[in-house]
Length: 285
Ligand SMILES: *[C@@H]1O[C@H](CO)[C@@H](O)[C@H](O)[C@H]1NC(C)=O
Ligand SMILES: *[C@@H]1O[C@H](CO)[C@@H](O)[C@H](O)[C@H]1NC(C)=O
Image 1 (cartoon, rainbow, N blue to C red):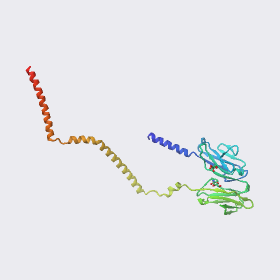
Image 2 (cartoon, rainbow, N blue to C red):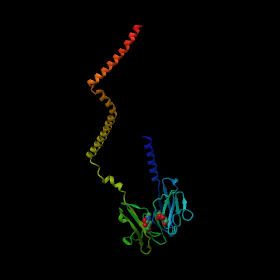
Image 3 (cartoon, protein in one colour):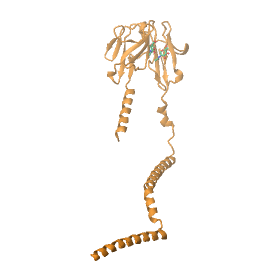
Image 4 (cartoon, rainbow, N blue to C red):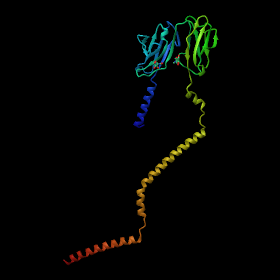
């Protein structure tokens, strides 16, 4: 592996670790509604504590206020709220120093006698959920459950379980206990199952023969490409050499041989001629 691809891999890993650096907001007890005077503990469950996650909320009176002296008691990554008031009703979420946010949750604090305990976090499609309608002292009184203002079911024991929830079950729910009163409304949200989770089971695998054919075809294509490149390179390298060969193989015409021979003969003759006087001269001496 060369250096550039190593750097690419490292930057990819850092991007991935950045995107997984998130916080999850959990609350205990897990309920969408509380009675006045109840206690709740909210936590930012974080992957990276150095990101500095803090709990914030919007209520009808305040916006983006932080868990602190005005409301709640910070305890590590948790925020505890003792003695809930109806004015603590609102949207709660975790936020990092960089401004990243967790999912948000709605909390309703009732000043009345009845609350509906429903999932506070979005429910995954196909899961079962249980709704409990209760007073401060009892959770098994006969109760009626309503969705968007219409009665969906009357239960003698104060709770109902909805099996295999679907997107159609999403909505605003409330309940009523005769002789005690009605709960505030709460929104139940259902998230669709991610499509990728069901894709591998539904998508048929490609037929093996086609797969083999495609593999062979792509390998052949690659080999052909390599051969082509090699051929072109050889041709380019051979060109000057071939020109030399051509010149060498070019048949010598008779006239050329003649002139060559004549020239040589002439030069030989002139050498002879020049040599002769020397000889003559020396012989004269
Ligand atoms: C809180 O209130 C501010 C200002 O109204 C708004 O911009 C923000 O989206 C709210 N946050 C949530 C989680 O509802
Ligand atoms: C909070 O409640 C409002 C309406 O009351 C709703 O539109 C919103 O989706 C709820 N948020 C969550 C996270 O349930």
